[in-house]
Image (cartoon, rainbow, N blue to C red; front, side):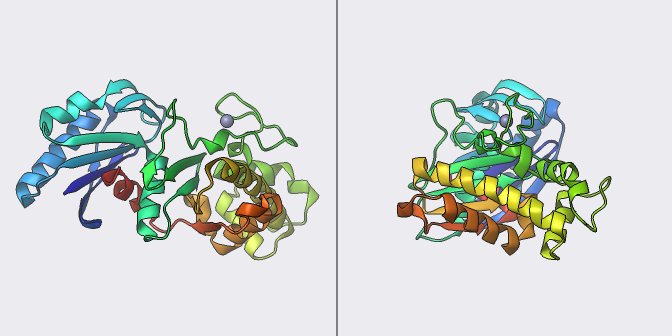
Length: 294
Ligand SMILES: [Zn+2]
């Protein structure tokens, strides 16, 4: 059996898998000081209670991780921590593998998609924009464990907003939930709209687009253009079958996926015009599923 762990700020999701099926799932509420010992203890306890025999633990982490060593998890507040000795203390005979949570989610989506997809790229549109790459069924971390950081691709020459990473014009500054609201506010006075400037959320903006609100449609076009251009550039380097679009913003559904695809086709090289761009379907479970099969 395999264990997949998806680490969030104070909530850690854990899944037990056997033969690509989830057989148990639970959540550990914890704090950063005791996060990984709490996780190990709860898995150990569960395994003892239910007689699970595990031979693999995979961990998806929200930040930069090199091998099994955490470099930095900005939203959790943990830095420079080697997870191998912590897990080995509880599970001495179990193989441990770590990766970025977006990579784990990318693998989870790919596995859930059936046999025909071997290579895929996942883009998560949430507070920021993340990404993960799977080639021939294996997550690719890259030489600096920075593979998939599509959120910091330079795509916006027009507004050149400063990004949290220190660069300007990153994809994340326009195509994240925060970016969507930022763009909507910037152009608010140029359109007749039913949106409310002070309180609108990314969901409100994309819901307005569904009702053909002029500002909503303008923002939808602008972010889809940025995403379509980014995906066309990435595809030239990675040549995958499928791009999955996940994260809270992807709940806008078909209107967003269709618009991104429309712009993608405009920018894509002729040899890769017909790849598939789909909404991710596992939601919050993609991370644990992918982590278990790293
Ligand atoms: Zn950036």
